Length: 459
Image (cartoon, rainbow, N blue to C red; front, side):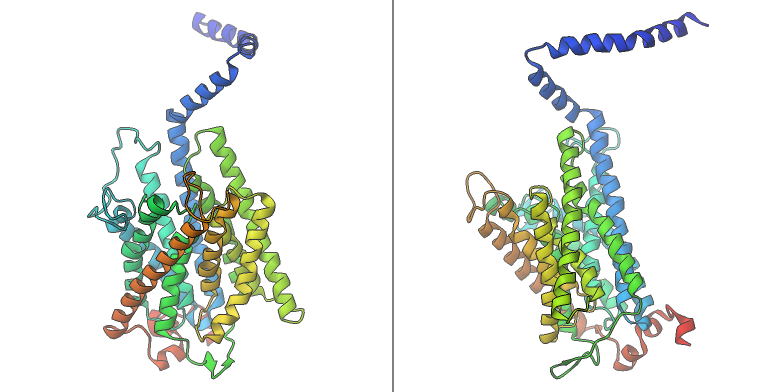
């Protein structure tokens, strides 16, 4: 055995003793708290923290990317069988388009180097990546942040897909998706996460995107539903003709995938994992997120049971989970666990109440995305100050206020509705948005895709 190896073994044997002596000496130090604080600060700025932060973005982004599959399964299950292949194709295509457009222009608009009044970013062109040879001053790999932000924009586009299902042609929808992901969504994001108008002027707070992501998608979906109109045969005067989905178990699978994806959505929005405090926060976010979803499910179950004479509507239960998740997304860290359950529970009730209300207004939302994402997004955003100081207006402490949150909700709604309506109208007046009545009755699988999702059953 070589001398070097002998020394290594001897050193390993003495290591526990050395550690014990060192620990005792350190414990006797009167400045132990200061030393621990300095140690944690050093770790936070270390290469290890840089890697941990980057992995949080990357792993969180991978989990959020799976939400695209969740939306696809939920929507494919809740449309009629003659449109399931179309809905699946739309979801795969919109994810690809969202990624490309967010690279071409969206990311630089969401996080601009300069802006006009904090309202419109002026950084032109595609995002050019980062220097691979050095650590970024931001404390994480630049491309890890781009990837994490990119999967968020795909979520907003998926919300629109479910609402306008079964009566919109493929290419007009994808053109709208391109505009939404390149311009509309990034502008809204820049107001808060890009340190723009809402962040600097109103101390607006939206931790992971109840308004910036979900309400943005919900407003765009609402504009599309109004301009495109309902499916043929959905409404006869005041009568609502139910058009049930083709595969409830598939929709349930989609709900579970979305529930899973939300842990990345909210958890990785902590944006750091290099210290004990950060990991504690991520863990608490996971717990609160799960409890809010559970609260949404149970609230939706009880509410539908009361309203529908003891019957529990499965689709309402699924959307109750989503409504609870959207509701907690604006602030998943600060609320207590009990508050998280209540916040999610209110979201579940809102879904049950607003689905039939939309039908009374003859707004055809195939999957219930407007109540789950738009309405619950507003609720989740407006309740944020409750977890802080309950401030009515912005204050010197910088806490979220009800007035600041309301400004963010209204500004987002007005901008997204106007911008989305312009795009939908242009598409309607130029290339057309809806298929013909014959094509809609036949099903968009045959009319647009040329491939049926369930050919054996159809034949």
